[in-house]
Amino acid sequence: MISRDLGSRYSPRENPRRSDAEMSESENIFLFVPNIIGFGRVILALISFYFMPTNYVIASWCYVVSSLLDAIDGHAARYYNQSTKFGAILDQLTDRVGTMCLMVTLCLFYPAYTFWFQLSMAIDIACHWIYLHTTLLQGKTSHKFIDMSENPIMRLYYTNRTVLFFMCAGNEAFYAGLYLLHFTEGPIFVGIGLYRLIVYLSAPVAFVKAAISVLHGYVACINLSIIDVKERQERLKTN
Image 1 (cartoon, one colour):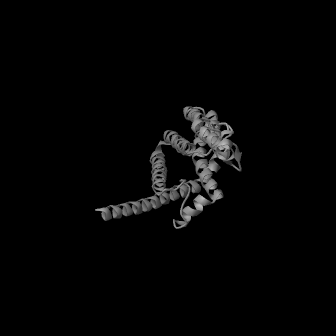
Image 2 (cartoon, one colour; image 1 turned 180 degrees about the vertical axis):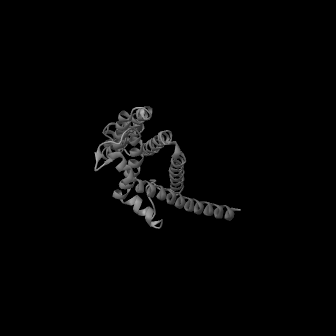
Image 3 (spheres, one colour; image 1 turned 90 degrees about the vertical axis):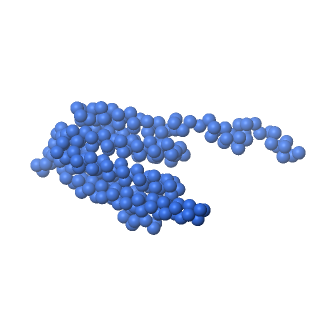
């Protein structure tokens, strides 16, 4: 009797459980702040792609701003407690597609090196995809999470934010430098253009990043094979 009377005093707005349920039903994750920023990244990327072959100033600014927003939407997701799987996938796709479209443009600018750009794209897409798919099958919560029992190089790469940022930024700088170098050398320092210098300095990072991606894919293949073996063993037990 007492509990019923107390319960009757709560309106739908005042009842915490009911309000939480109502809120979850009415939420539109597409309108979350980090996802809106993500949509802005996509628009800027598309503008960059359009101008890439002809106007490096507009293309570069849109590409750079889109990349910078990648960090901002992550902070927004944590600040507003609006982390979503959709947002994480949107970020990944924007990053991958952005790099791929930049390399397609480089194939046009440097036709003699088309094979190497194609190889870089193939490694990036294939290794990233198989690792993501494998971690989903393993029940992990993030494509950047690895077990301590996995390869130590991968552990350092994915758990040390400084290393991860340096490798990703260096990789992007290499391809961006090649893109800008097609149009201009940039400011001259000690007899060498800025963009050419960026290419020289970031090239080793890009090559190491590609090697890590191959290792990335190799580890994923091993983990996927373990899943296959376990599933086959379970099926044999039931037969």
